[in-house]
Image (cartoon, rainbow over all chains, first blue to last red; front, side, top):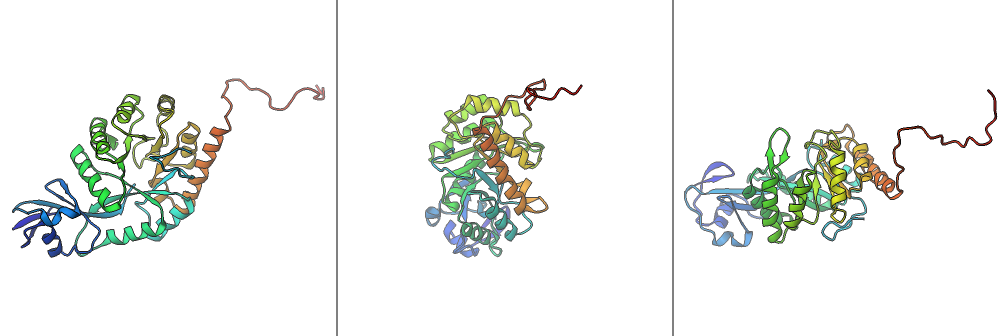
Length: 65
Length: 257
């Protein structure tokens, strides 16, 4: 299916958020996730199904003021 | 010293971590300032890059507390989701809540700010709202659960100092028990000293240090100014007056005319 990952189209095979993150190379990273604008805690990624056209945001620490 | 949700820093400088020439200079500035809290943010992570991971490693090595922000959020929904993601990534209930209402001034959308502050406070967050000096808004933020308020000095990054010292003084007098931090617009150590002399409990700044020619030296200058301003407040300054009053005693002066 096609997702929007951080605003860019991305083809993935995984059916859950956890599978998609592993497939995209985020394993072991300190990241937080949102699905269609709603926060998804790390512990719920494995039970969060994905659908074609979903918007996923994956964020990590950065400098800020 | 004021208590920020139970934390009592000896040095109430909240230092931003953005815009430094290099990570090493950022680390020097934090160390030399003696800041015990730094602000951080979140950005989109690309799988191959991992820049966020190395930045987070650097901050953890510094051993300071972090205050994550919701910079760049324009809606309540964005700010709340960003805060929830920040809590998981940074492992803290602290959130510097920004809901921006206008892009030229980066003025907070105080209506959205109050709503987001209520949602986050109810969800267990300890909210540091970036607000204006408006005392009515301040009261609503306190009602929403905020135990700290952070009014702007001037627009973010402008370096203009305290645009409205009268308004900031009024806010201080209306909320004597609430820890107040001037957040944004500070350009010089003298601005920080002025805010502390007004009775403010802390200063949050980033650009004035990060973009200085020597960020580490400027960071120390701010720390000294904050301490000076606080000490001056405690020492009870004199009132300004319109007419001169001789400081040297005139009694016993030789008559030479």
